View 1 (cartoon, rainbow, N blue to C red):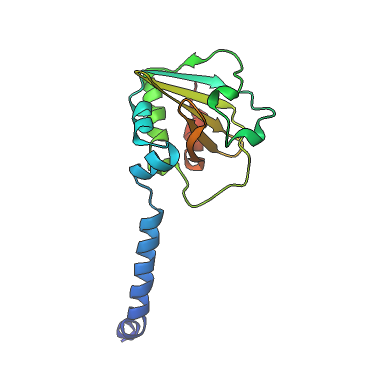
View 2 (cartoon, rainbow, N blue to C red):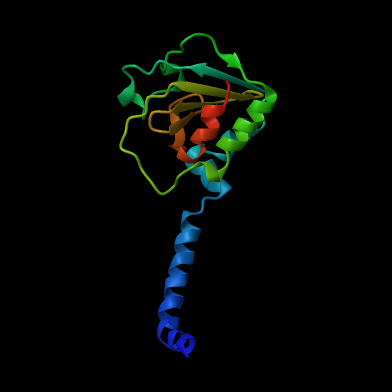
Length: 166
């Protein structure tokens, strides 16, 4: 009897709540084309990262460039020392993490000015993509030979990225 009572009273409401939950879940689930557009600026930049034949890691001095995030290029951030080549297995793992929709938190926005401390350069043929990572606020920026073309919060992947030995 209690089950029938709930069926009669809650069923229309339950159906509406379920439909709303499904719509919210679908809208918050990122797809690979969201990553290409919102994080990397284009599918071509995603492919450069995935197919990179050379990957380098470098440290950055972002002192004084806190407000330049929107207009700066990757080369505007002075490097601290030389870039270090990244092993092919580690590079493939980094590419997988950085191009995965699961890496990014699409539901939040942060009010901070990123100060990246690490850069990763992915090169495939004549294409080059730099990804600058700010571990203070877990935001990355993607640069492809000019001003930033994309970026996003990478909170979900922080533990994996911190463990990396660049």
